Length: 212
Image (tube, rainbow, N blue to C red; front, side):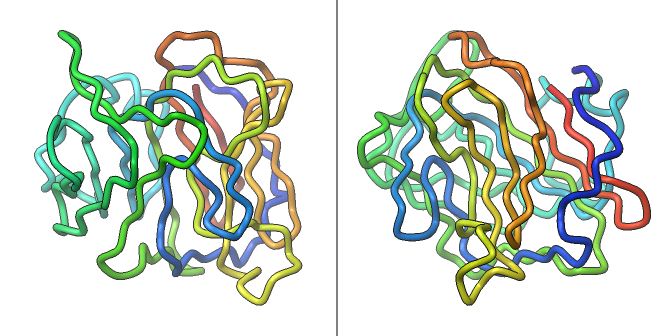
């Protein structure tokens, strides 16, 4: 892991998230489907550091780690559900396929209509909570696509204060959209057919930071 972007505070300071979580597509009417693999999605109610990512990003978590809210490992390898190993908010697999490899399992998205949806209640991020979202991705997709979202983040819809979107553009840059704000989390193209670990860290009294 390496520090990619630090100090940008363009994300709305009262950001919160109380919607359903979707992986591999935009949560609004715009499809914007992702092509490639996503693995081991983790949500924390605390900020995490570069040293913590370097230590644990390739390790399986027990589910009892301090501050860990949700963890979809995507190691199920079979069936229509991805287990949440913390709060049992299992995710529904909609068309996406399981990838089984010697290095581990993941979910494969076809870029057409595949996505994963967390249906068991909202994934809550309050406006007083620090948080970290991290996951692995592997893709060669050239067009724009959404990796993780609970809305468009355009600032135009009624859910603008709590909808957000993590997406790539045609140049491979990764953006975080919320309430009409656009934080360029990663300005290099990591969509090269290799596995990369992405982490977004929001410190309420400091800034928003991205790591790859």
